[in-house]
Image (cartoon, rainbow, N blue to C red; front, side, top):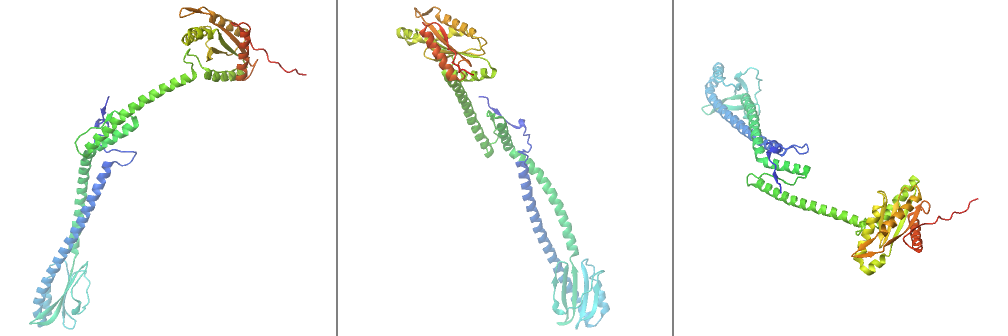
Length: 439
C-alpha cells in the first residue's frame, strides 16, 4: 500500500494558512496575543503613571508646605515692625521655584501687606483664615499663619501650579506610547515567528485535510514531529486515514463486485443461460421496440415462430443433458444463416422466435425459413447417436397480419401449428386477415 507524507514541500512553507478566504489561525492568535499584551501594558502604564503622578504631586505639596512654613517664620519680624519693603524683598528670595504662581502676605483684618505674582497669573481675593489648604488638578494653595512668640501677626498665601508635573507626565506618556509601540511591534514579530513555528504541524495537518477532501487521496499521511499533543493528533489522524484507506479500498472492491454481479444479473434476466440467446423477456421488449420502428418507417417486420421437431424424443431417450446439447447446437446452426440485424431468441423449451426487420419482400423471409429448416435437419450426432431433429416454422408479418405484439405472436404461433399439421419440417405463413367489404 503506497502511503505518502504531506509536509512543508506541499505548500506550508511556514506561512499562515488561509481557509476559504478567512484569516488564518496563526494570524488570529498573533492578533489576540498582541491585543492582550497591549491592553496589559496599557493598563500597567496607566496604573504606573497614576502612581507616579500622585507620588510626585504629593512630594511637591510637602516641599511647598516646608518652604511656606520657612517663609512664614522669616516674615514674622517684618509684620511685627510693619516693614513691607523687607517683606517684599524676602518674597523675592523664594520666586526661583518654576511652578510658583503667587505669594501674598496679609495683615490681620484682611489688609494686603506684601505680594508677588508671576507673569500672567490672576490675583485671588483674600478669603480669610478659614480657607485652609486646597489642591486641585491645576495646582495647590497653602494658607500659613505668620506667628511671633505665639501670636498670629499675619497670614501667608502660597499658590503653586502643577504645570511642570503635567509637562513631565506628558513627556512620560509620549515616551511610554513610543516604547509601547516598539514593544508591541517586536512582540508581534516574535509572536508571529513563534506561533508559525509552533502551529506549523497544525497548518500542515489542515492543508493535508483540505488536499484529501479535494483529491480523495487517502494514501497521504501527516508528518509526525514532536510527541506532544499535536504529534499525537497527527498520529490519530494517520490512523484514521489508514482505516479510511482500507475501508475505501474494500468499498471500491465491493462496489466492483456488485457491479459485476449486477451485470451478470441483468444478463441472466435478458439472456438464456443455455444457448446464450436473448430470453423471452428480452424478446418481448425487442418485439415492442421493432414494431414501433417499422411502423414509423412504414416497413414490414417478420416474426418467425420456430419449434423443434422430435425434441421430446431426445429428452426421453438420452436425457435432459443431451437435450441441452441439442438446443445449443440448433442455436448455433440457425445463427449461421441469419443476418447481423436479425434477432434470434429462445422462448423456452424447444421454442425459438426470430425477428426479421425491414422486410422488402415476404419471399425473402420464406427463403430464410427454408435455410433454417435445412440447417436444423443437417445430420446431428449426439453421444454416438444420430438424432432426427427438425423444425416447424410459422411466420407472420406486421402490419399485414397484426399491429400489436400479442396478435402478431398469436398469428405466428398458429402458423407454426399449421406447419406441424402439414407434416413438420416445413413452414407456413399466417393467413391474411379478413377485411370488411366497403361500399
